[in-house]
Image (cartoon, rainbow, N blue to C red; front, side, top):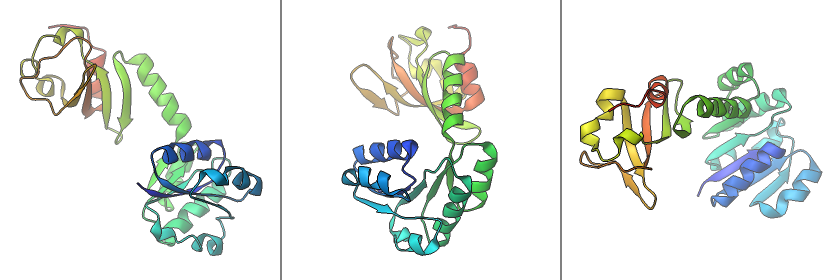
Length: 219
């Protein structure tokens, strides 16, 4: 269970909050709008009305005690930037801030944010990848160059072993897990024999992995 400070309870903030709560996290919700806090307060561990651009108000929240602080404000970049900076100044362990443009992302990273979420770009990027890369079910970008993908196992791999195919050498992808219909095989052995309908969780270079998913089937 994580202890999370969530600042900005618009639609985006409330969505994040509900997901965190469903995962068992301890979430403190903060917004300067009284009507929003009054409406959501019963669902949260704590809910406070505060203007977090005021360092005195922010300092009452014992910022270092939280595992993560999320600035979910999307319609007031100046406030988001100020709050991100103040959180770090007050000893926040990990600051996650929301951006709506690339230039905002850069400013936030330079001014207190440890991580920046960019929902519009992330959603558009995931959709574009799924539309343009066959067999991609999901992926999580870890850096500009590497990601973890969930892929459908190529049909021509069925009945063959991991050792025979050797995807690490041939395609420069590392298989972390095989997902079957009723179980998961973590770090599969070289003798693992693929079945039709298998999915695989792989780690690899983004461009090389996408090229692999779009290649023509062959043995």
